[in-house]
Amino acid sequence: MSLPALVPAGATPPRPPPSVAPAVPGIAPLTPAPRASSGAVPSIPSVAPIVPPVAPAAATAVTPPPTPAASTDLGLDIQQLADLESRCAKLDQLDYFEVLMLERTATPADIKRAFYRESRTYHPDRFFHVDSKELKERINELYKRVTEAYYVLRDDTKRKKYVVDVTGPERAQKLRFTEASEAETKAAAKKEQEEQIGTHPKGRQFFQQAQKDADAGNWSAAERNLKMALTYEPSNARYKERLAEVQKQSQDEARDKGGSFKIR
Image (cartoon, rainbow, N blue to C red; front, top):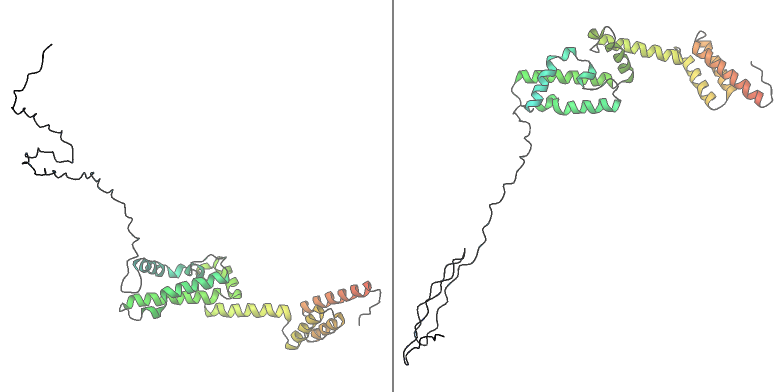
């Protein structure tokens, strides 16, 4: 068995070599500090903080806001100008429903909304500052037709006649509601009224009173007023028909009550 070598008395034992720590990412390697003199405090080496690597932020897709219609200094955007051009080019082939962009089954409320929509866009007062004479003329032309369409379609009597006109074989000649059309409409309305309540003022007066009497169940008064109406219009079929209805109703009521009724 071998023994370790002895160090002679009084001799200083040899110092072991300084150990070197392996390099660590993010940390500065330690270097051995110089031997401090007797009584000095050894300094502590500074250590760089460990900062984890930061991944670059992913790019976020940004949806651009919708691009508004390009505006012009003419009071209309590009789409509206194209619409104006297209409609004016074929205005003479459009009926009033097409001018207001409506179906023929449109209600009065639909017609009113369509007119206000067109007025907000194409009312001539909006373009007083525009220098383009050609643009003003087109706007005036379209707005005039829009107003004309509304004037006809808002009236029940005119609208009914107009629908018949534009769906018939003479559509091309009936697209515009002319003065002749106005006269025809008035004549048709007058004829319809005459057929309903008569042509003579006194006859109409007695007929209307008879209607009120019949509604109140006063059959004898209704019969009397209808006979008076017939003295002014003896050939009025409506009066005769109504008189027969009143007389039958009066007889049925008298029969139900068990009484007798003599027609005078």
